[in-house]
Length: 345
Length: 206
Image 1: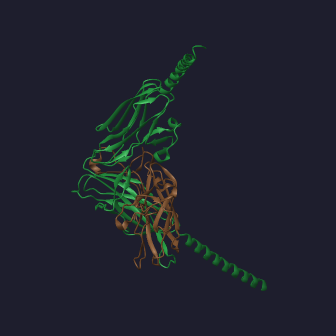
Image 2: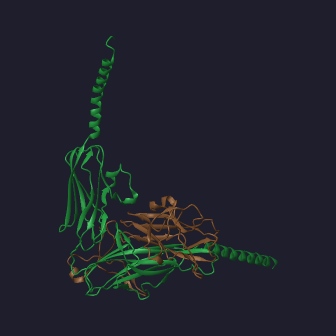
Image 3: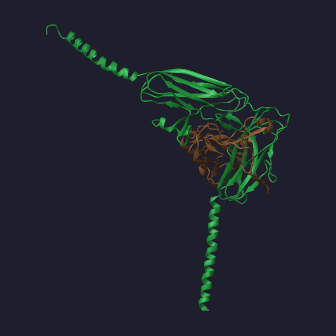
């Protein structure tokens, strides 16, 4: 009986310690602040539709953070800046976009619990009289920690960090399936004369002078006159919005650029391919004319740029000139020394 | 190139669940269906995820001593397989403000009185008061000069456009940037709670 009483006392003390320990841990966790981690899929939606039709598209949200999130979906229009969306303060969203969910509305928050997966379904219903053109907008998911509250905090200076993910929707309203994007080259940088032992760069931008966004379709073809076969490299098919300009990125095998340090800020790795804004054509020794042809656009609307790059072994010529010149210079020097000697000598 | 499908598959509800297979219809069918939907970056990864993390969502700069810098930090994480990379913008709802008295701590203009939401500058003297930030880490813009140059947050209450702090033009896995907030006040600043909301907008390219 006495043993049981001792056991009970020990269990009670252990229990109190456990409760205290949990409370301390909870307080420490609360003090460290909730962590925001939101995943959204897909990352880009492209829609082409006729006026008067309806399209719905589901977006999946996952809360991987350590607290519940208060998510507010909203729509904002954007303009382009080098392939990235730029949000202007006065951008007004299109009025024909709403949510298909019965329990969610634009600009109204809902709770996404920790580890929960949910869907937000976008509904696009342009009227039959809507103007045929492109509409670029982002679906925003603004997430604040549902647990964080600023009331009762003892700090003098505080704030809240809010995470927002914006997914781009490129919408074309058109009665026909024909893409009206028209791409042309701009700001091409390609040397005319190069040294045979050095790589030469190619750099260009694409401008969409059409009325609809279009992927950058095209390739760069390089054909040396001597030693090497023709090579063709595709452009990375990124979207270029109507009236916008963006740098072209050219895909190439990593093997062909093994001597070029990877520019991580301007490259995309995918298996053995990478894409760079500055393409480097590198061979051990080039000689004579090298034909460079860049083509952009589709069969109906294309822009072609052609130029010949001439490779001359300037370094080799320089060394030969130097080697040939040294004996001549030496001879002249010795002759001048002889003429300077006193005649009496 | 990925495989595009006509919208199909499971659709159910308590509040709706759609399988994510809305896709492109065959050429020539546009006239009948009246729409084409594509999603993701099919030429690299189909329907890839975009993940954005914040290390903390409450920013307590604590009790501040006049003439002494007070700092806090938030780490921002981005993971995307998007071939066109991503960009992270930052913006404040308004300058640090006392919600009761409406007293405001202005955004910093740094040591040179030149920094703004678009221009960074050095800020090492605490007698130059205000609230600002700098950033370090992966893909952080060069303007922050490795955490030595500060900027104001773009002020949404003044309709200032959000400003970029991190950017990458290609696939970005586990990229981490750290924002350091810096605050300095002088003795004339009215006591009280000062608050704002800092919004970080992360978005994939297209």
